[in-house]
Length: 303
Ligand SMILES: O=C(O)CCC(=O)C(=O)O
Image (cartoon, rainbow, N blue to C red; front, top):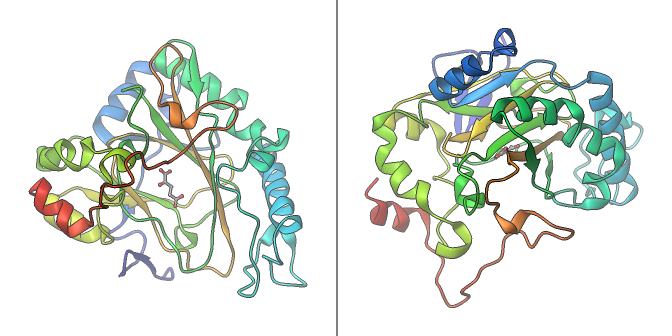
């Protein structure tokens, strides 16, 4: 029996009815229309071993060395750097959007490497581009991301923008993996959510980015099935801007290292917050506009 993890504050085991298994699409990799059909059906594509494992492991070492050298004892003394064991008395250097680490050649070899560019070039059937901003995350024990659509954070450009989530190391479900609410991108029961919450812009509207904090309450109310998987270094998961996702709680004693990056066709319009030499990232345009909390937003959205 595997150890428990959590979706929000609810205990779950994996695999179970509450948290099923994602399917991979490796047998479709040479059939672009089949890949598109699967994306349309599932809202995601899980690809095993897309990126060279050694390249990912080398980048992991670079990221951990950066976090260690520029932080304050983030790792437990007398442990292996590559194990990234959490030190409750320490703090890593910030990594999110930090070019000093995200654009290190070892890291870029993963995030902007030939494998991802080759995949998206073929998937879009035209040249593609990626955002310069990279969401490189170090997630401590006990933490998880709340459920959300990515469109609310980066929806000002291409309608064909996709997210690609990349773990830097082997990440079992109990260490905090990406989980997808399969059905959220296409079931009619999510129409109202897509047409309200799914049309918002957190910076412009000052609406909440996360659709609450309880993933299982969402599937209970709207349907769909939460799914995740044990990831290995080199695996990636790609999903749409309207695929609801969260992460399982990190139950280990180690930092979970991952990065989410975005790809789109090169000629499509682009959300300017995330590109350029120093992307502006999130910025509230109208400071006088009051932030709306989730309960208030739900009433407005009627969901
Ligand atoms: O890594 C995580 O925990 C969350 C990632 C995420 O929200 C994303 O890839 O859009």
